[in-house]
Image 1 (tube, rainbow over the protein chains, first blue to last red):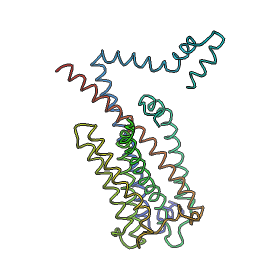
Image 2: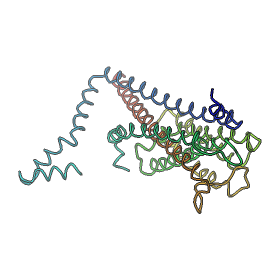
Image 3: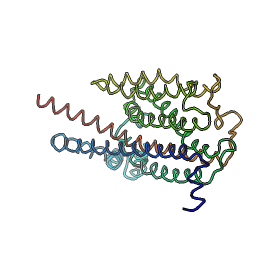
Image 4: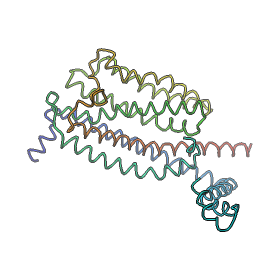
Length: 99
Length: 241
C-alpha cells in the first residue's frame, strides 16, 4: 500500500471516527433504499395476485384505465366534435389539451 | 397543490421524477464524496474530523426539513383533506428518522475526539433527540389504529404539536449556552466557512435531498398500493360475507 493511501486511510489519526461516520451513513441509506424497494415490490405482487383473483374488479379497473388514458387523447376529438366548426378543430384541441 | 391530489396523476408525475432524482443523487454523492474525502482541507483546529461534518450537517438539515414538510402535510391533511398529504407523511417518517439517527450518531463520533464526550444534555443535542422520538412516536401512532382515518388524524395532530420543536432545534444554539457551535452556514451575513469546505457540504446536502425525493416516491407508491390492497380485501370480504 502506498504512503499516500495509508495517510488517507489514517485520517490524521481519527480514522475510527471518520470512517465509522461514513460507513454508518452508507449502511443506513442503503438499508432504507433496499427496504423501500422490497416493500414496494411485495405490495405490487400482493396487489397483482388480488386483482387476478378478482376478475370483475380487474375488468372494471381496465375500463377505468382506458378512460383515464383517454384524458389526453380521447378528449381531443371530443372537444373538436363539440367545437363550432371543422376549421376550428385544431385550436379547440390545443386549448383542450393545455387545460 | 390540489392538481396533484389525484393519486393517478401523482403516480404519473412520480414515474417521471423518480429516475432523474435517483440519477442526480448518485452523481451528487460521487462529486460530494470526492470533494469531502479527497479534495478539501482539514480544519486547522479539528484536523480530519471535520470531514464528519459532510455527513453530520446534511443529515441534520434533512432531519429538520423532513419533519417540517411532514408538519405542513399534516396541516394540509387536517384542513383541506388532501388525500396524498397523509400518504406523504407516512412515507417520509422512516427516512426522517433515519436522517435524525445518522445526525445523532455522527455527532457523537465527532464529539468524542473534539469535545471529549460522546454525549451532553445540552439544548441542541437534547432537542434533536426529542425530534428522533417524535418520528418514532408518529410511526408507532399511525400503526396503532385499525382504522386508517383515525390513525392518520392522530398522526397529523402529533406532527403539528411536535412542530414546535423545530424552531427550538434551530435557535437552541443562540438561546442557550450550548457546547454545540452556532450556525455557520445559514446565518445573517453569509456563511463563515471557507468555500473549499462549503462546496462539498452543499453537494452532500443536495445528494441527501435528491436521495430523499427518490426514496419518498418509492415509499409513497408502496403506501398507495397498500391502500388499494386494503380496499380490495375489504370488497372481497363484504362480497363473500
